[in-house]
Length: 274
Image (tube, rainbow, N blue to C red):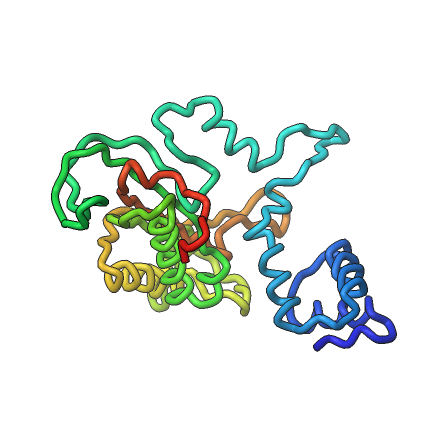
């Protein structure tokens, strides 16, 4: 338990720093108010769960925030600008921005499955929609390239399977953007020596281990990873000391699944479903 007796705010701020929760001041105030109402101290597990559930990754507090640019409030959010493309051109989209992946209309094809009435496996000709998904796993790949990229691919596979009432993952893709590789023993004319962050794996380490981690998870699941990209970029700007690149990499994980047309939308749970 995190003891809140005495200076409760200082206790939470200390726990915030010690556990690496990255809680903002308003979130700490929210916790103080609610634990005082409950009349008890929080556990470290509860604080960790709160921090993860309310992280940028889950809540998009920055990506979906209101912005003021040059003193002018903007009506749209960054996330809203992304979603605006679908709002303007929704053709053939069956589900978007409401589930673990997007679903688009496919074509008619043969599927092998269980007949809902008889329980007998059979092949039938039906509409076959496609679930599509791309996400990033940048920070984990920067810290530990093999498991970071592997779990990026694994999480995307999970999302395809969890879309609607269940999709069947079929093919995957991976992508990597890194700074100059600086391959040991193989210097290139465009590369220059410079300090690299000790917290991150180098671009060479990421490209040595990351693609193998992503491929391993795909292969062990039984899904072929058939597409992707690789980019190495780094540039010194005209401003003194400013260099642009991908020291923190982009690790892209994506794929395609197919599913039954009747399974595109989730249903509300009913008593007895469990």
